[in-house]
Picture 1 (tube, one colour):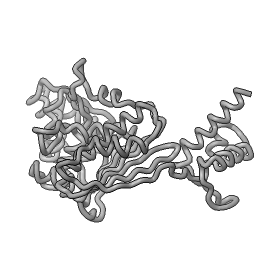
Picture 2 (picture 1 turned 135 degrees about the horizontal axis):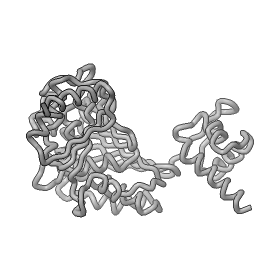
Picture 3 (picture 1 turned 180 degrees about the vertical axis):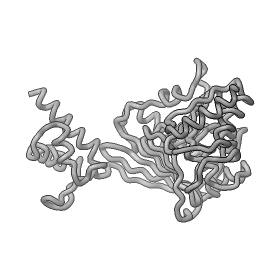
Amino acid sequence: MTRIRERGEGVRQFIINHVEDHHDDITKVVMAKFGVTRQAVNQHLQRLVSEGALEREGAARARSYRLPPLVRWGREYPITSDLAEDEPWREDVAPLLGQLPANVLNIWHYGFTEMLNNAIDHSGGTRALVEIQKTAASTQILIQDDGIGIFKKIQDALGLVDERHAVLELAKGKLTTDPDRHSGEGIFFSSRMFDDFEILSGGVYFSHEFGKKEDWILERAQFASGTAVWMKLSNHTARTTKKVFDEFSIGEDYGFEKTIVPVKLAQYGDDNLVSRSQAKRLLARVDRFKVVILDFSGVESIGQAFADEIFRVFPAQHPEMTLLEVNTRSAVKRMMSRVRAGAQS
């Protein structure tokens, strides 16, 4: 009886974890996963509905299931000199998140306070809106301010030609417009701790999904004003802040010495990666790290000048650094081999 009960609990937990992505076909997914009948799956679904863990919509073959929000909350905070990011966390957010595992709460503590602090210190705005929605499977938090906009501020501070260039700089890490008070690590690490992490500002949309190989830029209609940061995390993830920090650390001092640079972020629209100026933009500020991993996911080919700047000129100028590449297509590998052979001749 205990084994049957444990199997039933496993089936129901699987439903909760996957129904968000399978509103309309969760029955088929569960049948395929556990080798059970449609009738057995329906019994589990009915139980979850009766317990309030699921909501049922439609009838018969058009039926779908969704997770009802356990928490749906929002509040607007005036951005003043008296607002400190730990106060909304301690007084409002943490109690609303409830009894989540310690590692999950640690990730939320880090990400929420870092992003709200950015709004307080950097946005130049007058208010910050915080919204929380929690289901049995996951939690998502939105932080939105009415300030100048993060990409516009980085563009102005670094003298960049385009707001899209700011996304590439954020993806590298160690970027801040206020180095006296900030290390520039908050967005980098936050974007890699959450299942989904998105920033919308101006006409640029930045997204990072855990486990995916690339960050990406999507141009869209101009956002009203300010910056919106959206974070989502499974309530049952095994991920920890330490694991994420360790991934980009070298040695025992846990310094932020390694980064991954998504090469595709240097490519806009139908542009090809062919010029030295594109390569120099890709490599800007990476000399702050000891190890740089260039992720070529989504890059079909590169030009000779682009490759020469990265794989011959830059290593010769920075022999103390380690430059690695991953997810390279055959055309990229051929061009890399060509310029490296020229460097050795």
